[in-house]
Image 1 (tube, rainbow, N blue to C red):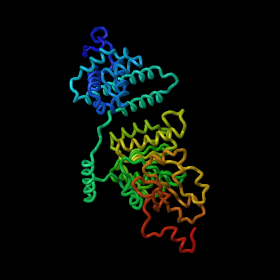
Image 2 (cartoon, rainbow, N blue to C red):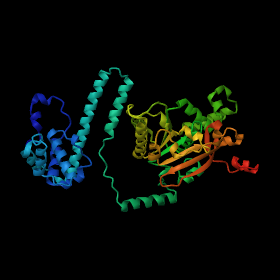
Image 3 (cartoon, rainbow, N blue to C red):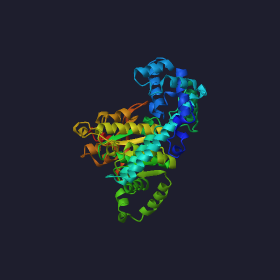
Image 4 (tube, rainbow, N blue to C red):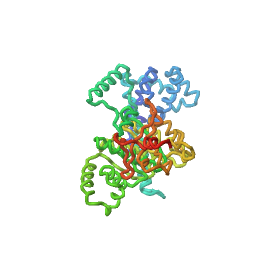
Length: 474
């Protein structure tokens, strides 16, 4: 068997001018030979290869037969593989007994079988890329009823899908290595020299409840009814991250970018949002604060996109690009209900499940925190106590399942409009779920005119205390 000229194709000078898909017959043959000689080699290649990764059809048939036998704890050698294929009527498709026997004799180095498998996988990905490129070129030449944006979206989805097919990492870590790394991190944290995997939110009591702040790899669900302040809280935390030098990306699918900038200006300058939005209302003494806030905000790594109706593939692409260009530590998704599934024909529950699992995977992949805003069901307003519960997340039980932390924003003044004015400034942050930590509730200040959440001032009594002094609980 001449491994350098598979099927005699390249021996034809005219055929040699044609485009031959990327492949390595030598590597395919070496992998199959190693498996036939020593089934334990499966442990080194089984996580990496699939039947479709082989270029030669006969090799696909053989790999499938070997995989079936090994996974059934049965020996896979020349004879047993041939017998299985003959029983299935596929022996000739695999080249017959003589070809299988010839494969078993071809093994440059059994020690390098993992590398041979990686080459086979790399060539497979390249072939898929060629096929996708041809398909996308055809779509661009003949778009039919599709717009250019729709064709581009198809291209992004296909390329992203290929990017997700990278070779798996051999990332098993022993206890000894893990404990050494943990001890180093604990010592660094104790000495204040780094090692932290979390970033504070800027709200001291919430940070205490969350054991320091938002952690890398975590998906945090932030829920609440409309006008409770979900976006304001997310942006307050985002500002804290950005001012500490951590890059923040905000996918604002509900609010245009101009409004995001207006809110941030109001937060930092402490000028009423309505005056920021309507410049003619600004007063002379506002301008120094506007100038100072502008300089302060310009130095913060806070990036905003207001593209609507994003699906999880588009979010992944945007987040990866931002991470690559500017770094990324916190991704704010505002909000879950405005995201689309990759397949509009599937049920909404299925689409939301796809989104939440995708966002959790993205957090782990990039080593960031994803802060996902979500609406809660209207039924909460029918209860006497309108504080949200985990079961109140709208349309999706996957939020409760996939999120590492679930936080609800609750403001009594929104639930009970007749309360005194001072109640406008108090908000409850309810941590209903926390993996590796306790649930609980903290009270913070909400400054509505600046859409800002901050710690409650120590020198100011909370509204609840004032009501009790007057003689009675609400």
